[in-house]
Image 1 (cartoon, rainbow, N blue to C red):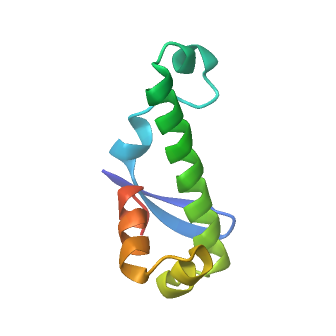
Image 2 (cartoon, rainbow, N blue to C red):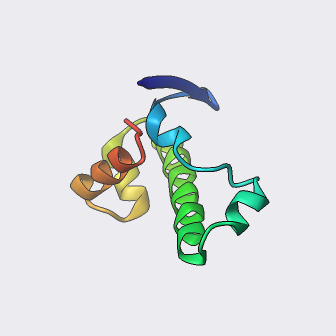
Length: 87
């Protein structure tokens, strides 16, 4: 299921299954119960997702501008957005 979320006056389409699969980053007990490699991957992924949301806000929804701001080509930037359930 997908869900629309309004963040700072910007609409983001989120893949709900991807958003709810991992424990909250505020849940220290859940993070500490995970192996270090998994916890690091989770935290890095959460950072990457927040970063992409902020870039797309600055780019006013333009994938081309977002790619330019991140220093990635459009194809790889679009794949990164899709990996995080963002459109």
